[in-house]
Image 1 (spheres, rainbow, N blue to C red):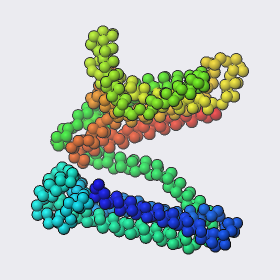
Image 2 (image 1 turned 30 degrees about the horizontal axis):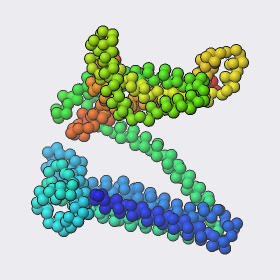
Image 3 (image 1 turned 120 degrees about the vertical axis):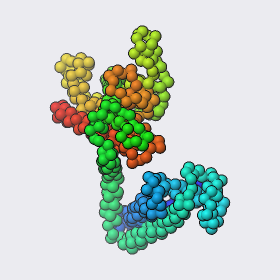
Image 4 (image 1 turned 180 degrees about the vertical axis):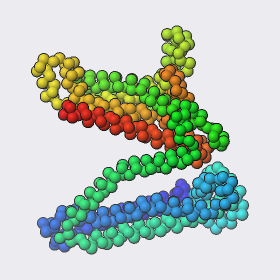
Length: 501
């Protein structure tokens, strides 16, 4: 129920009309091909379904491409047009133009709700221009909350935004339907019994598959570019040496700029330290579980144990975080805290590196065990039989034959677990605390890069301040470290794969 409501209905109507045209095109294309062959399918170059698919694809693909481009370009162009209405005085006073445009868009959505609900007509809303208080009250009556004060500038920009959006949506529908009809007529006209419909359709499907495969690559490129540009902006405002070699993390959102200490070393140390603890837990347990399931367990035990083990991977990380905070942390305090089992006060609070690392290790067990189990099972049985034929025991065969042959896959499983550990956030926030520390004591509170990325991008800080832009520098640095880790692991995998293939 938003203007959103009207916008989505118009978009939904356009999509439904295009899909209906695809169905009609498929039916008419098939009938036209059969008609040109006097109903004898043997005279057709391709199967009759290909002719209908050709018409349907000719309708769907161009219209979908145009619709996607329009949906991306229209908001950008509208924002650029609305930005011209922002007073120079507001910009000079340091107001964020993006926030002002966001307020205008929020008010525009609210006005559409008012019209959509039938509370007031457009003409009546226009009559309220002189009294912005009435507009705010009117939006509140229909349940639309507007956080900031509605000024005359905001109201004028909202009405301009709304007009441009409605006009753009109308032309979008006409343009998409026109392209769909053009594709429909063009494909239907060249449909006859000698038309090589199968070749055209298969080429079209190949292009679609290639486009789908390119999405992952383009997404990666987009992520990297966004990180690079924002990281450059951060280093323009904050010294790179202080970031990479600083040992203190004390950001300040007071607006004093240089009052912040944004040292990277405590964060990357906490990330690696907690990840190492988690791997110390996950790798032995996961690898031993995989060896047992693949080499020792009966089929009945394996059928029950493996799905039960893999359930751990499906538990939300917030649940693991609560488990660390409410269960594991207090247990560790009772064991290592004041008056604990060992009589030494090593741990003063439940939030510590060992709390988050141990719970994260439990979460990572299925990542190691499941992949390692599949890799061990993929080792040829002939290698086992040859070892047994030479007189080796089962344990000797596992140590000296199976594990070396499966080593590349096991390294890949450990790498996946490591990447998962480095990128974990919720368990760290709830289990390890928020203190940036360079300590070697696992019973102290620590934090990670990902946790600080979240904290720096939330709150009321200005987006162009170093305290906020540092999140992109953290993400870029972590990306480079993970990439180097992947390259090293790939080198190890290839080296041993050549040895045991």
